[in-house]
Length: 253
Image (tube, rainbow, N blue to C red):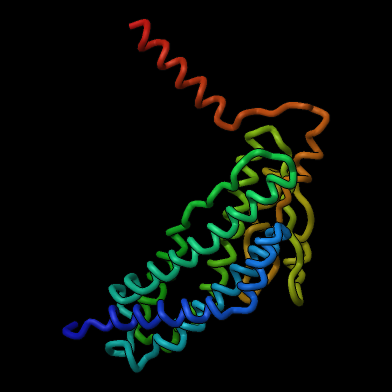
């Protein structure tokens, strides 16, 4: 393609996204909760939905059949626009989740910093491949709407799993809570409830189109459940012991 539309298009998308996030009343509200140490994972979910909706809106208004060559979103275009914008959403949400988790840890008298989730690049690649495989963008443009919001919500779930796993390995007994959102369907109603970590069905972290159910985790509950053991295991203890053994062997040699 002689005319590369990506640089100008990406710049416009990033500009509009930044403007909308800075002016978002909902984002200002959840940041206020964080500042006052009252934020929970339900607020992280609200944060994720808001930045997901903003990105979906900006993508929808700027990426149209008229601006795309031959009315198709070629792989080269999709990759260079969706990778940076969706990765930016991941960073915004996961960083906010770390701050909230750190506060929740403090409230539970856990001297632990919140753990950051790993980027699920496969989900981004899946959207890129799907949108670029369609010859007519008009028939696939829906994928830049709710799936973008769904991806953003999944970052919250991945953050919860990262921290629940860390606490589980530290000797706590985390509970994962799935709450209903909006006009929940029968499938979602069957999944709602509280599950001990590692016993929850894998569907707990899944959502269908337009689903706004939430996954929640409070480390204070895990701490209270484990109070009688009076045990605190260092989650990195095994690694430290292995390193010491290796060092001792080298010293003997």
